[in-house]
Length: 485
Image (tube, rainbow, N blue to C red):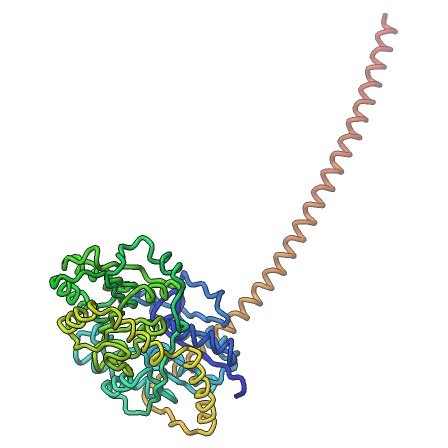
């Protein structure tokens, strides 16, 4: 396939750490290194350092809403940003968020006539329910979300469950399942690294170690984990539970764990960016606990599998797709009692956990290289389909709004360009006036020095004349005195 230029747009990107941000990083790196050209477009963060990436990162203005929703909210309708993007000759625009990022993608499509692909990563009905209390407003928000998604040329989902969630929201169009990959290689890290990363943590040898990696939010099934651990402790089974991650509910989760008497057994580790250090935690654990029905892909389950670590998952959840109970994972009902019962059995048979983990490593692992290669092949099809006019026209109300915004950006861009030109011309004139003033001051200083020199010279001559005249007068006085005497 010929080289393609891909524009990757997402609301989250490092320093924000989440599954979608990780996906965009891997898309950008692998496209750049193995396939073609990629650029990432994302909101501004004050402490972001994008210099290490092999692809350009273009950031647009944002509002700080981290205390409210955990992210900065992007304000993507920027004429400066659009001017930059227009000059990068993109073949495909790939949005990884169905709200702000997709609105930006659609506005860019209006400017450069390139197709928009949107990957649906997250169950937004849960996000909407958490953010909006009014049922009427929730329905309207979902309707606008679906309209935004339906306006894309092609829709991808990271799992079959994510597609079913889109249908639940009201989406009626087609979608294609394009799973994400894992940036871990298959296999364990050296024991020396495991020892170094876990040093200082109370992890007695022979005691079962459970692990959770992800955002510390209640909707990740964390309450189920904590309640099950309390039940396990009541049954006389000791253990250690390690939570790795950050999130808006972290303080409440830590407090709830303490209220259950799990202090010293439930250990909390801050979010880790170093992927090798995260691998070390996966390799140290005996089981990965992920009773989440929120996640559409459960990328962390594949990360665990890469390290030979088996996961305990909710049957029927997206994270449990392609996982066979007792063969490549362990499936439970979505409640603490079911998880506790499973853990009581597995704690007595840790070799069984290792066997299932090895199966998972062989059968459910997918690398990012494979995932992005699939996407790259599809990009070529999307470009050709768009060229042939095989995608539907976009003439809905929201499209009219985006078209209007794009035209408004054009006007703003032209006005801003004209303003820059006027400012440039005025600055040039001011520079000329300044040079003339400086020249006049220089001539005035030179004339002043000349006059002072002339005055000093005249004063010296006058002084000499006065001295001579004084000497002559004194001589005459002396002559007169001598004659008188």
